[in-house]
Image (cartoon, rainbow, N blue to C red; front, top):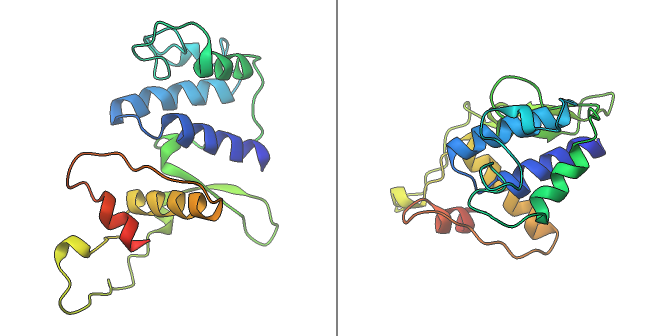
Length: 172
């Protein structure tokens, strides 16, 4: 369970701000690094390096070392994690579920948590801007906000105008 939590924290803590293209590249790096691929993720794809300036962690950086190099060093030992992120989608598509009756944690797609059977609660007088449609992305944001609030951490939401940052805060 601890390794799963580490991988989940790595994915969202380091890669959560990336664009879709960056997330695809970072996903390849994480998968290679956590499955013991030679080079600890450097083989995840052309141009996907860590800390060198052209990879998902070092984009535009000329500085040697730092966080990206530390993560690369930790994951470059060729050690495979016990429960790597499943194939199908990216690492960003999965959350950790506490598990069933056996208590073992497992990777579950965020989409599995979207309840499509319950109608949206619409309060008369509400505007469309106040509606939060449950999607995997809104569930990801909601869970991260709840975890940050439970830990007493301040949170900064980044995104373009009208992307739902304020609505997400007020809804949670």
